[in-house]
Image 1 (tube, protein in one colour):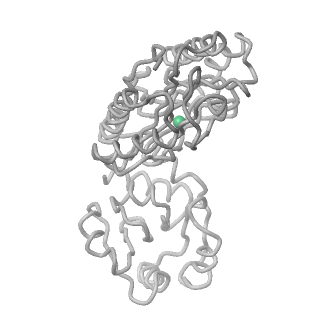
Image 2 (spheres, rainbow, N blue to C red):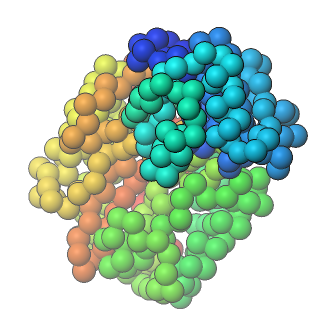
Image 3 (cartoon, rainbow, N blue to C red):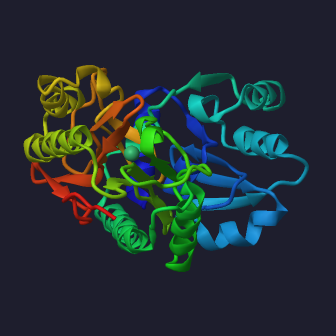
Length: 357
Ligand SMILES: [Mn+2]
């Protein structure tokens, strides 16, 4: 874990900061091991402090990695931070822009008088998490495996006439029963024409004959997220839905085969996008091919028509092409993968042959 703090300290040098203040939950967990919901993690050149209130002192002391001192606040977070900063002659402090509210920023400026300059490090702290270490890869694989088990169960559970919310409830109940903390995002269960809505979270809509049903869900297991999508059918699908299913599967298989380390997120996305476009559905694939997954469900890298990320070994991301036709329905197939030795290793093992219930 010291390696993580080392990377952060290299960033401090690069950004001319004496310390950085971590307030986001994902980065706090990544760099300190602390899972509570309120804290300030201050990392300096050779010391690091996790500032918590009374509720979390015992937990924080148990969880933090070596080299991090747990400080319980006396008066307020700001006065405690101010004391630390004054005592350690920290002057320039970087912060994670995406994880600090305007109110917090204003309070830090007003109350932590020891800070001479605050620097917005934007998403550069998040980007340290872009390459997963072997322990993370192992944990992510376990999370994906749990997702596969849940999918296997839910396929047997689904019957025509059920509501989408019943399917979602069974999914989420099963997750927790199997040890997950809960869903990594609100489960998407979208049947019939609703399946054309990429983020159609479950409603009281009833699963009917001929419906495509998009099941997009994930778990949080041992602090790591999984994400998967399969599209199944209630009764025999019509010709166009079947055709769409084949195109999406081909696009995904081509991407899984073709994505290599060194490739840009743009080029990776293009592999699937070109196949969908050449089959006449150019405008029906309106989202990106994939996103990084880790402590957060959506993180770096991005595989999209706008991405400038370069894909590298150790990156974990989703590959999820889709086609959506208003009035008819949609199909998406999503796996989670890691780049190893230049190529894709697929974590997801759920079947992709058409499933008809
Ligand atoms: Mn996804």
